[in-house]
Image (tube, rainbow, N blue to C red; front, side, top):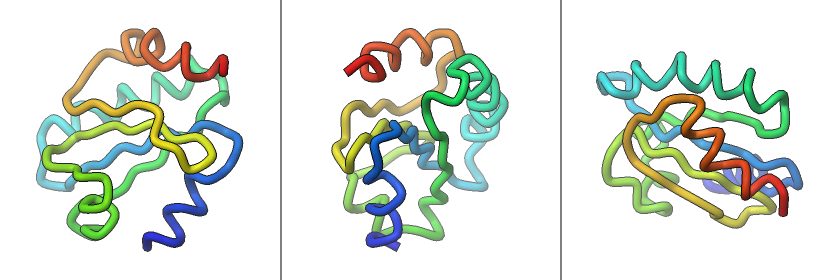
Length: 101
């Protein structure tokens, strides 16, 4: 999965990775927020969900210790990360500066 993950986050388009687990209540709360964020960002980012229980090596590589954890990548570089739940508008404000680079 690591090679596939690197390919996934290696492009020019920013990729927001949602590290989640099926059993995680806050992760379920975050799911509709990410749908709204995708609408607000108008296709300028790609949002991908990675289940940490099914992909432990990727979670370990990026030291994901709590879920949900969001991480923004571009060209394979980790630009930003945060654990927990925020509103779509707050996430948009946080991510905007990274999209204008």
